[in-house]
Structure formats: structure tokens, C-alpha cells
Image (cartoon, rainbow, N blue to C red):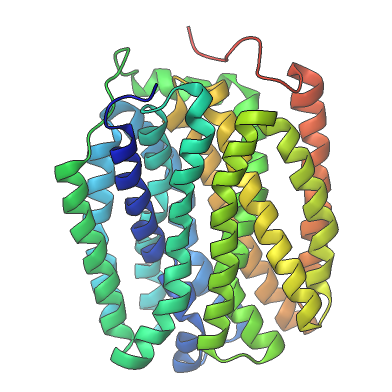
Length: 395
């Protein structure tokens, strides 16, 4: 049985995550317009797109620790309310350096994932956490809102007002969350920071899961935020057309995430990840081909597999680390965010150097095969395909 209020708090957290992700992905949604307005090269544009991912990535580790210590309700509310500050500053910015600086702080919204996983997982029993966290992951659709509606709003009311609207939405939902959300009752006293962070030093499995999320979530973020630029650069789409297609990628990946959680509850996250890693290794090559039909098949196939993989990884996190979910989520989430930070920059540099994005997609396929090998060695051969005989917790 779920705790009373579990579904209500799951709904509140999912919307909060969607709002946070919309704010986090706004620069990428507006990138085609900003690139033209600021007259940026491919490398400069890719750095601007990736900068918000940086703080949203590395910030997940301390934010996850803080969530384990103080509870998700307070931390989530503060993050959401803070969103108006960098958004308002970006609305007033008119040069590249200002977009880099305030885009970095806009990335704080991306740390909300570590907060939400720690908040939601405590409301549900272990056998339902895969599905619950998969539903929470639907909040990824916020990025789709940014890449689809961002350019449309910017055309109608201007880039500055678009930033202000998204920032205001974040602050308003932060107030709503503070009033209506509640932390699940703890069964034990919260651990100290030293006790929480010890798991990162003593459990290699936490780093293995980070590697898997580096690919599954990092691939989702990298392709999601860079897709408008890719489509405009390779196939000549307008910002609105590119945004609409990128939104489709995000929606499919987001919809696949709860399916991944549901499947993981039934067949195990390990089995699901084997399928995901092999599938990505095969289908990523299609995006390296310069035809829109094959690129579309590759992109949509990757979206589905990456979404399933996200759900699979976050079935395993609370399964192995139920008492340090926020802390390990911070580490794993940081790895995923970093996985979204570097590929856009690498692709921009490769585009400037070679005139093609092909090598980036080829490397994605090879990296996926490497993750499959690590999964087999570290988890499947190590602890078996089923649920672990002993849940890894600190004593």
C-alpha cells in the first residue's frame, strides 16, 4: 500500500520537475534565435547551450545531500522560487558573456532532479518505486515545452518577455509546492552529511550506476538541447520547425521513462538496461547518415531507448541504496547532467573542424557498447539478474 498522500505529492513533484526542466532548457530552445542575434559560431553557440547543464549537473551532488538531510519540500520550493533571478537577468542581457554567466545560474533548476527522486521515493514502497519514479520522470516534458513554445513565444512577445514568463512560472509553482507538498514521514533520523557522503566513497556500485546514467540521461539531455541546432544546421529547418521536432524527441523520451520504470519493476532494471545499451549501439548509427528519414528513425529510436534506460537506472538506485537515495541520486544525476554537458560542445567543435556531426553519433554507439560490458561485469555477473540478495545500506 502507498502512504496516504503519496499520489498527491507525486503529482506536485512531477509538475515541479516539469517547470524546473522548462526553465533549465530555455536557452537551448531559444538557441537558434540567440545564435543569429548574437552572431555566434557553432562552437560558441554549443558552449552557450551547454553552460546551464554544468551547474545543473555538478550541483546535484550537494543538493542531493541537502535533500537527504532537510527534506525535499523545502529544497524544491527554494530552487523553484530562485528561478526568477537568473531568468530576469537573462531578460535584461544583450551580450554573449552575460548569457554565459546567467545561463550558468539558470542551470540550478536542473539540480531539482536529485531533490525530486529523494522526495518521491520515500512516499512509495520498494516494489512500486520504479513506476513512481518513472511517472516523476515525465517531468522531463518541461524541456519539450521550452524547445517548442520558447521560440513561438519569442517570435510573438520577444526573447526578454519569454525569459520572464518562464521565471515567473517557476516562482509561482515554488510557492504552491511550499504550501501543498509534504515530506513523507521518516522511519529513521536523518543521517549527517558525513554519513551520507560515505556511501560515495565505499560503494563502487554508485559510480557504476552513474556511468549508465551518463549515457541514458546525458544522451537525452544532449540530444534534446542540441536537436534544434542540429536540425537547423543539417537540414535547414526554421527555429519553429526545429523546435517542434525536438519537442517530439523529448516527449517520446519522457513518455518512455515510466514504461522503463514499469518494465524494471517486472523484469529487473538490469535486464532492461542490456536491451537499451545494445539497442542504442545499433540505432545511433542512423543519426550519422545525412538523410532526414534515417535521421528521424534514429532520433526517435534513441529517444525511446534513452527514456527506457532512464527508468531502468532509477529503479536500481533506491533498490540498492534505500537509505541514501538522495545522496546517490545526486551523484548519478550529476553524471547524467555532465553527460549532457560535453556532447553539445564536442559536436560544435567537430562541426567547425570537419563540417559534420557524424563522429559524435558514432562515438555514442561505441560508448553504449562499453556500458553494456560494464553492466555485465559489475552487476549481472556480480549480483545476478534479479533483485539483490542484500540491499546495500550503511550500518
